[in-house]
Image (cartoon, rainbow, N blue to C red):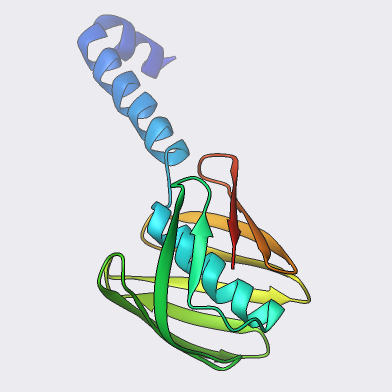
Length: 152
């Protein structure tokens, strides 16, 4: 009751609090991984799951190939993304990798089980999941509730 009287008496305060609340909800829902982060994850997961020896991934959302060099094993990732000129490195075991994206200065977790994977991008505060089928990789970005497709 006190809060209602306070908000009623001071409607400017109510508007400010309401605006901050709405802004916070919009920020929570608007987490969005960058295209380059999704493409890097697709490349790493695709190579680990499919065992294909490729040096690029085709990103259908950007309509272009993204080139990589370096090495990827089940316990260590050390690659260079030529498009952005940055390294992505990390390590792990049992299908769980902890990666660091040097171009965006943040961590990414990647958990691989069979031909599926999931993880969390700390830079955008977004979860993602995906599946690899032969050379095709599909990633679902929970931040934008959308699928993104790639091919090795």
